[in-house]
Image 1 (cartoon, helix red, strand yellow):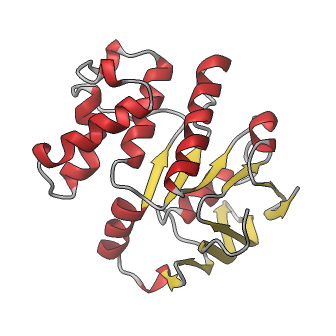
Image 2 (tube, rainbow, N blue to C red; image 1 turned 90 degrees about the horizontal axis):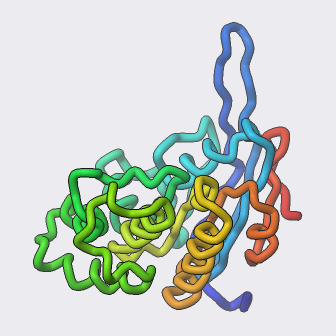
Length: 229
């Protein structure tokens, strides 16, 4: 990755703990990371190591005990919840292991949903949603409801939904973990290609070491600490 590429997102000294009875469990301990536009970062680690907690904090869905997040050098801790909600809607795309699509809607309607929530009209959102569905090889399935799509198709629909607002940062929590090998590889290849085409920064939690090795940066979360591997 070209060092002149803009640094998009940084996390500095993130700490997070939980209380379990009388015991305090440290989940994250002074975690630091940074990612540039167009880069892909893998976060690997054992189950229960805090990977999902870290991703939720990076996406401002959870708050750290201490530390800060900087997006384009702007400190996100200075924003209130309404401002953070707007930030998430506009600047961050989320993909989860389970697609969280709305079953009563079609693939096209699910992809448009973030824009509709932001107050845009169906007429305004439909062209971009159709284009994205074509990019994830689902142009012929846009009028199908969720239960008419395969698991891989559902996850590709979720990927299109994550990108509909043209975010700068994509956060993915085991996006291939619930798929067979062929479908998982297709979803990953699409993410990789779209990151390159859109200069998108992506941080992906994964157990798949083969996928992690294909990314620009691979990090291990262990004992609350994150280190490059």
